[in-house]
Amino acid sequence: MSARFQRREALRNRALLLPSALLLLVFVIYPAGVAVWTSLTNEAMTGPGALNPRFVGLGNYRRLLADGSFWSSLAVTFWFVLGSAVIGQFVLGLLSAILLQRPFTGRMLLNAIILMPNAVPEVVAAFIWASMLAAGDYGTLNNVVAWFGVEPQRWLTTFPLTMIIVVNTWRGIGFAMILMTSGLAAIPSDLYEAARMDGANRWQRFRRITLPLLVPTVFLYLLVSTVSTIAIFGLIFALTRGGPAGATEIIGIYIYNQSFNSYQLGYGSAVAVVALLISLGVGLLYVRALKVDV
Image (cartoon, rainbow, N blue to C red; front, side):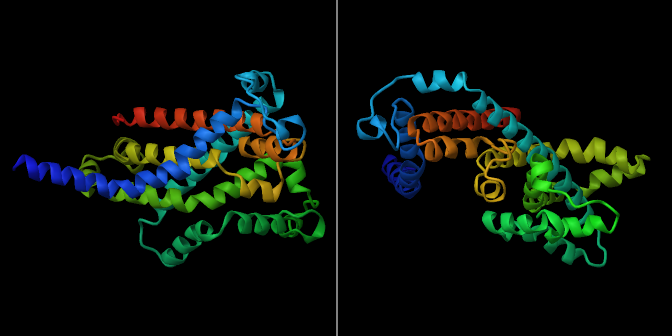
């Protein structure tokens, strides 16, 4: 192969990558750079910071470390991600994938029901659940539990974090099921046959064959799901706006409140930069766990 042909191929490959690189630059790298710069200023939407922003260095970050509300929002985010993405969606998605591997009447209908929430936009899903969780006799859930003699509840006030975990789990089961199904399909059936002939029961086959061979798929799912769940905004904003009393104020809601309710763009950008670093750190941990070179 001539050197000229190799150079031409390399130039063509770079040209093919150019549109993606430009999109990445315009919609990811540039906004991140602007957020980093803004986080180093006292820029605001009102007052002196709006008229003439000045450079404050790491002042916003020092304030952030001493802000109890910031740490509270991080704790809420942690439990929200753990409860909905890591536990709820993963466990139910894996169980759904295993169940749908077996032929039975209504299999396609169940598959469609599980996948349907993925097609519903965040805000639409929030309004659906707001109707279901409404207080008094108008809420669907209150009408259901009334059949069992349970008094009507104010679900989004009494159990706010639990309810948004349930809602987000409902939305994400379909995605988890798709990935788990692809992982299960990649496991050779010969392994199960050999284990069955050796006397292994279902639990042993699942623990010794399915789970170990499913680990790469599980880590891929956890990477995508964790990062996307940290970034959720519209679902919770439409349901609770972070309330009551900050009980559902995940990091995205906290950034919005600081930037557009308190009008402190510099401080809100500092929180956004920290959230970005947390997401990058989580992503690197998952990639290292998968032993993938980056």
